[in-house]
Length: 290
Image 1 (cartoon, rainbow, N blue to C red):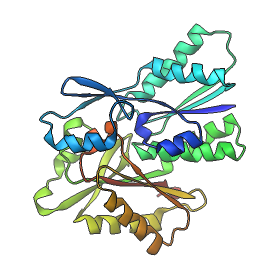
Image 2 (cartoon, rainbow, N blue to C red):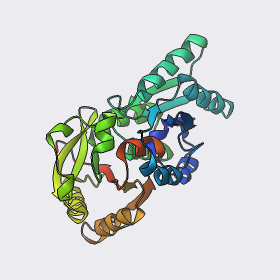
Image 3 (cartoon, one colour):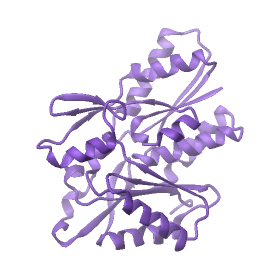
Image 4 (cartoon, rainbow, N blue to C red):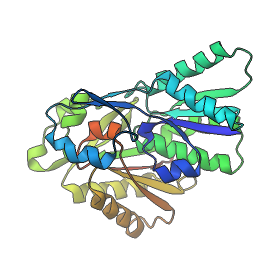
């Protein structure tokens, strides 16, 4: 049996994680000297409520290798022998490297083991890795073999399209999660930076004035870029304002005439630390060579 694993920045909903029995290694968040496990010790709603009051930006830490190995050990008791771990981009987190170390440790401790264990650098952030994970889980249910799932992830991960709009760049700049923010100033004019992924890190793709134009850009780009052969669902992420995500969903249905599933999922504490308040994102598979 094939066990799919992830780190907590995938931000998939508890319902989806349970439906596909996806194992999650939590990141660690430190707030005012107190450590929490992402989504275990602190909920996203509670975090975003206190975020504006914090004087210092919380810090995040990757899962330990043992956190991944604990998932493997428990899954083996249930009969799993093949493990596919899909992690947040190596350019934005150490989660991937920690999972690679976990794999090496496992085979050092169990040199006679015949299990299969592959770690994927998703090149994605937040629900971007979540999109790849969910699609992989669906393909597993369709009967894909372990080798076919590995090939899918490694071949198509570069085509998982990201769009992220935030109220301002303060948290992302301070945490080093975007690469070209220094060239962009505009918060006083209600200019919204729209980011995507490039070379394993977030980068500003364009800028628009106001959230309505940001959502229009999302829909226009979706219509132009989406690969409907692979995109049977879209994930919309949000930090603290669900209404923005609901507006985007409405526009995808009305303007893009998308008939697949549209999941709305909240960003977790680890991702929310860097995104901040007012964030909204969208993820799908784009056509080749876009």
